[in-house]
Image (tube, rainbow, N blue to C red):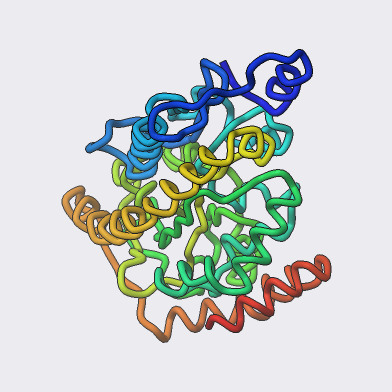
Length: 344
């Protein structure tokens, strides 16, 4: 069953033993404490498949090991537990324990999180991961905590573009007249400025849309470009290896209600395991940036990379459109963008 703050408080009120001491000094939550981790990506194993699913499984294994089985976790891939667009709001209410989610999907509820897929604000993994220990990371974490959500593992992924046509979308003018999935409101604004028509849908729905012609091209992470087999419906690819203007913040998250209902020592283990998995995430994301080119070339697609000059052209468009729009949302967004610019 799911363990919640309500369960914990109810047990305490009735005078029931809320927790006991296990060997090794770990305080055990009531029997049956299980974290359910939902995500939209294809399922695999600890060693094979989409690294985001693998990361969730590694988290589950390590947490169970370090708590001597007092805290367990189950992974539900492919939106099998909950539809992707419902996950963030469910975590805020404590109805979902954990998810690995592109944070910008929650931009309709919390506009500040759109910084997680703001074109041009992150141009390398090192810069993105530096947010965690810089003022921008604290500001974003504070916003999330206030909304009932906490970051367990910081994960950034470079984005690429798969297209149905043989000519890759490299420069902004290449998108003119095409129906493109940008992945966030802010990326959509940039695409519109470049002359594209934008289509909004989760990455798990890109394949069908490209297959039917409802979509000409899609921007998504290198890992999703592989996991969702878009090389089967695409004839061109622009990679995010080396240079990219499109990075997505796709963290492992936990409901604050659920987290705070756990004993302090379990909270510590959850956060320690999450932090330790960040190196794996960076390594696998970079590996997929390279692997995606191999996969698409093998399928016969035209593969292109980005130059520093082209990245700056996209960034300039973003600065004049999406950045200004984001900063105008509220004082909190303006403050976060200012802190981001300090990292550039």
